[in-house]
Length: 137
Length: 137
Image (cartoon, rainbow over all chains, first blue to last red):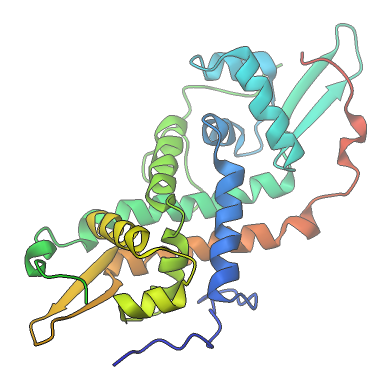
């Protein structure tokens, strides 16, 4: 007996947005695409909390990233409305980076992912694979 | 003037786990790795809500996936403690898939990502790129 009903719409437990299972999966996939990029998460975590950093601050904070790559990641995040680039018209020119309001709003969602990851140990029983051993039905 | 202090630990707003910015970024990255895989999110959203599905149910629900790929994704999710494979020892053998308790606990975190994505329109001002146009400082 099957307990699935493909016509039932996916309804998130907390915030109903009228998603179907397909659009929910696609929506999350689109978010993951925004976060891909080798350095974006570490940039995000450096800017969370209303931090404002110059390019050189970010370079110092993330020593493993090349200048070219850091510029590229910041540009992409700016284009994705996550990072804001603030230009101070002075001599010499000063450019700072911070998160947009929307970028900052990502913090609780990433916290939720970290919280989930932290639950693994308590929730997963060590020997749950014991019942395995037959073909897919 | 810089407002960053690299010695300050990253403290999530809600659930303090003693993360630094680096370990928080790494933690989220590890979660994203679990969710990569072309079909994992759609499988997740089909199994959320305590759904129990046979392999053939999942095939019908996700017609674009090949049998080989579906098996591979389910095996990986099983290995990652997200999906549970239930073997009923009967003739013919019956195998069902559902989420582990931990897999099910991913739902609110993915909801948080969807909620964040839905906020973009209200939070992002259409012409915030106007101040751009100078070199990185």
